[in-house]
Length: 110
Image (cartoon, rainbow, N blue to C red):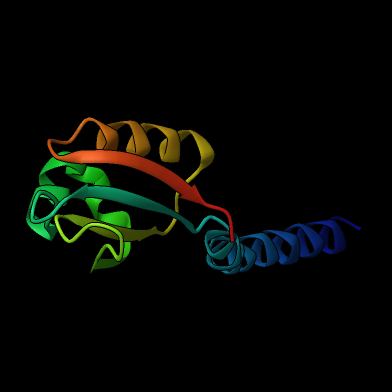
């Protein structure tokens, strides 16, 4: 009887250890968030973004800058972040809004 219970325990532990990487992989997909910025042209670059975000800059998955159709002196920036919780996203959004030249931020609700 002890052998069966030890065997069952080992099997359960192996399953739990094996499931953790899969769980992280699939949950991180759900934690992708994006934000749109409107900023003065040239005010936000990949370098200034990394400086503003610090260690959170490793979460930047995509960075797109386009000229605004309304005003040629304004750039529209789309930033996609991975592995970002709601609290982390709020902190990142506040950091982005405090950058020089940033006029507005808007979370993208895709």
